[in-house]
Every structure is written in C-alpha cells, then in structure tokens.
Image (cartoon, rainbow, N blue to C red; front, top):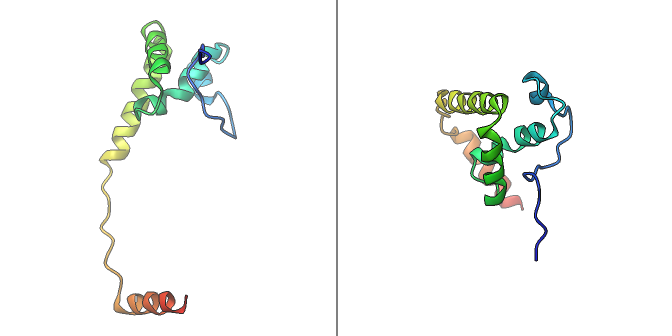
Length: 105
C-alpha cells in the first residue's frame, strides 16, 4: 500500500525559499509555505488529486493563502493578456544559411 503524504508534493527549488510566505505573514507556518510552493502546479492541473484536496481544505481556512492564490491568478492572467509580437519570416539569406548548415551535417 503506498504511503500517504501529509502535505502537497513540492518540487525542490534553489534560491530564496519562503519569499511568498514572508510577504503574507505566514513565514512560520510550514503548511502555508508548502501550499504557496504548490499553487502553480495546482493551477496548472499538475498536482495529484490527494494533494489538491488537501490544498483546497487548507485554502478554506487560510485567508493569506487565498489572497496569494488570487494574486497568482491575476498575475497569470496579466501575462496571458500581454500582446505577442509577430516574428517576421526569415530572410532569404537566413534560409540559405540554414539550408547550408543542415547539409553540412
């Protein structure tokens, strides 16, 4: 029988840890730090179902985590709303160089 985890799976990351938790005043609560770290996976639908259920239970009772989730959703939407510039097609000179490089291999 697989072992049950008591918290959402959190990928190990390098760099500053707990920045989001500190900014919302929950730096001392390890559950909030794990929730903050798992929110991107949760929003992307990549968090396993048991972890989603635990995260959702936590969110029901934690206003700072809910506020962070709302901020994260707004940030994602703002990024998706940014205009994507059209990239011009490559020039004939670039195409010729690419063909020449491909034939050399």
